Each structure stands twice: as C-alpha cells, then as structure tokens.
Image (cartoon, rainbow, N blue to C red):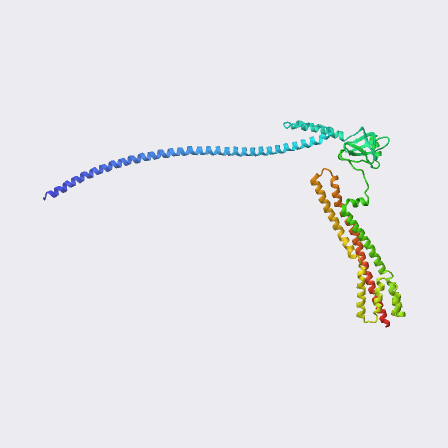
Amino acid sequence: MKFLLPLLIALSLMLHAKDSHSLERAYAKEFAYLKAQKKMLKERLTTVTRENAEHLKVAKKKINTLQNVVLQRNNTSAKLAEKLFRSQQNALVMSDDTALIESVLMQSTTMLKPFSKEILVDANNYQKALKEIFINSDALIKELSSLHTTKGKFYLSDGSQIDADILKVGNIATYGISQDMSGALVPAGVNKLKLYNTPKASASALGLQNNTPLDTLNIFIYENSNNEIADVVEKTSLDVINSGGMIGWIIVILGLVGLLLALARVLFLANASSSNNTLAKDALSKLLSSGKDEALNYLKPFKNATARVLKATIRNLDRDREHIEDIVAEAILHESGRLDRFSSVIIVIAAVSPLLGLLGTVTGMIATFDIITEFGTGDPKLLSGGISIALVTTELGLIVAIPILMVGNLLGGWAERVKDNMEHSCLHLINEYNKFH
C-alpha cells in the first residue's frame, strides 16, 4: 500500500505529462490552423477590398454616365416640351388666322355679290379666293369712285316718268339730266329713281356732266339704292303732336287748360289791383271829410277785393286797435281764396306735364323694343313710331311745364303783392283816422 500510492501518483504524473504534451500539440496545431485561416482571411479581405474598390469605381463611372444621360434627356425633354408648346401656339394662331380668313372671305363674297361678283371659295386653297377678291374689289373701287353716265329714266314728283341721262357718283349718289328737268335723284324702291327736291341740285348735275369746277356741290348721298327714300315734308304743329300719340294730346290739352286758368287768374288779379292806391286815397279823403257813411257810399259801387277790405275796415273803425287789425287780417284772408284761385291747379299742371312726357318716353321705348323683338332692326322706319312718342312727349311736357311754372310763380308773387298793398292801405287808413278821432 505504501508503494501503491506513490506509484499511482507517479503514474498519474506520467499520464498528465503525456496529456499536457498532447494538449500542447493540439493547441499548436489549432494555432497553426487559425493562423493560416487568418492569413487566408486577410488575403481574402484584401482581394475583396480591391475588388469592391474596382466595382465602386466602375459603379461611379456608370452613375456619372447615367447622370449625364439623364441630364441630356431632361434637356431634350424640355426642348421637346417647348417645341410642343410653340406648336400648340402656332396651331391656335393658325386656327385663329383660318377663322379670320374665313370671316373675311364670307364678308367679302357677301358684299361683292350685289355687284354681280361671284367668288368661288375652295376650302383647300384660300389664297386663290383672296386673290380674286382683291382683284375684283380693286376694280369695283375704281368703278364706284368715278363718275359715269348711262341712259335711263326717273320719276318726277307728280309720278310721271321721263327719259334722261343718269349721272352716277360711284354708288352713293345719282343725278338725272334731261331737257325738261334736272337734279339729284334718290331711290324710289326696286332700283327705281325719283327726283328729289334738293335746292340748286340742277346746277350741280350740269356742272358734273360738263366737268365744270364747282364751289358747292348739292348732293344727296344714300346708303342703299333699293330702299325708298321719302320726300321731305315739313311737319306742322299738329303733325308733331300726332307723332306723340295720345299722351302728347293729353299734355297739349293740359297746357291749354293751364293757359286758360292763368289768363283767368290774370283777370282776377288785375281787377283786384286796379286803382288800388287811388281807391284807398279817395276813401280816406271821404272818411276824413264826410264821415264813415259817406266813405262807405263812395266804395259801394266798387266790387273788387280792395274795396271789400276797405269797407270792412271803415265799418269797424270805432273798435279798439287790436280788434280792427284782426278784422283787417280776416278780411284779407277771406279775399286770399279769390286771389289765389286756380293757383294750385296751375302748379299741378306744371308738375304733371313733364311726368306725362316721361311716361310717353317709357311707352315709346317699350313699343320700340317690342318692334325690335318682333322684326329686328333691319328697317328703321318700323322704329320711328315708338321713337317719336319717346322724344316728342318729353319735348311737349317740357314746353308746357316751363312757361306754366314761370307764369304760376309770377302770378303767385303778384297775388302776394296785392295782399300786401291791401293791408298797407287799410293800416294807413286806420292810422290817419285815429289822428283826428
């Protein structure tokens, strides 16, 4: 047993030494393997780093190339977008120009058609049609801007027709020259001509025919030779009133009524103010010399307002002063109704007349617009009735209102002066009577 333990220990140490040596060898082998792996990894890392650097360099070159391509394509896109915008603008301009050319062609062909100028328009060749229009227009302008004489006929004012030389001033005026009658001609409808009563037009016609220089050219210019032109007729007052319609006659009647009332009021005021101062002086003289009864007898034949107020004053001279003044004021107030007679009616007529004229204006414009709605504006004669009512009634309303308003105010001032004179005469009579009594 003694030797067994040391033997075991020695055996254990030997085994341990042998294991240690094996472990060291294993560690050495593992270390060598790891060192080889490290070296290989370093080499691999170096290789990968180099390859990545090369790949990154290639990628950067590709990115730069792609960026340049993108920039070039962006520029190309911007240029194409600009070209597209310009093309669209040019298309719009060409569309507008085409519409304008078509409008010019339509207007030109329409205007040239009455002159027997037929222009055929080809939708695929506008240039040819425009060229024909310019050529025909130039020829027509030369023709219409010159004087040319033809044989023809025209009507006289009595309806008879005579043969004559027809001298045309372009397409805007015409003269007729014959042995019996010469003068300016105007359209009579359906391309017929009639003599117009233009003063001294005969001398102008003969001067143009003979190429004689003229200081004054008596000419009648018309717009369309197919539309008849009515003869000049001087309108009378009744014609003017009739053109105003029923409202015009109402205004005129109101004006006559206002005039009659103003004349009647003039007579009233003239009667009231006649010999006003003389009557008061004579009544005072009789009163002071012969007494109240004699003064009343003197005033008895007089029937005007001043005499009536003086009578009322003389009858009450024995009363106190305030009572007498009240009686005078009452007498003058009683006479005011007569002195102001018809004044309110005259003022009302002066105020209503322009309003009636405005009513006629509105009525005429409504009638005019009704005609325009139904027939259009092609014939101005259709519109003349409503326009006449619109203008004439306003004129008549102002013609009636202005003088009647002035006369009404003047008569109102006259009436106030008559009242003031009556009051002054009565107070003067009272004062003079009180001096001696």
